Image (cartoon, rainbow, N blue to C red):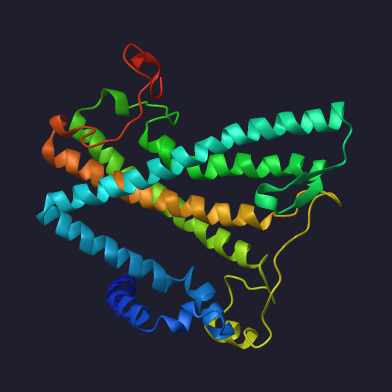
Length: 297
């Protein structure tokens, strides 16, 4: 127990040093013309060092926010606004998905065309109709991955309340804070650890894994090269499946940010009381008289 506590405190202290070192030596991990910098970026992208660096930032912002509540409100509003902006923009992909599905049905079933050329601004892009049909999976993934935190902010997720609905206001806020820290954050971190290396295993060769040490990855950098996955499920089908891996990482990052925002909002509402519930919340509405159809019911 003592060793674990020493390890935890040591890593918190090293987190501040690692932040300073990373910001003052950007070329060591952002100059991808150097293969060693690329491998450092991959290694530290899902490392203990990164976790504690982010944890240190969270601690500093939280302490400042407890002293100056408007700072914490500002962070909450900024993170919720980010989720709303991305979600509202990505939701339009649903319309594109429907229009493309109608186009594919007509081209395949009515006009019997095999290929389709799209040439906006004179630049041609030709693929088979089957390619456009399989691309619909990407649109669906975009809506799911990028709208998840927007839906959470808007209160649109389905939840089953056995105790939550009948307890007092401040008890609800304690439950929300506990859930964000001990459920949302661990789930997001665990998903990131798998998704990060799953992404890079389909972008470069030789393949990398979470079990690789930094020294091993730096040795691999001598022969590393880009090898972006372009294999589809069918010979002429959609071949951009590496985009799904990018969406997995983006989804996880958004959930982690929203966990922080939800914790801050719950903490602030706990301190300020019921009058602060949904304070500054940018929530969509269907209009006057449609309240019964909003949120989760």
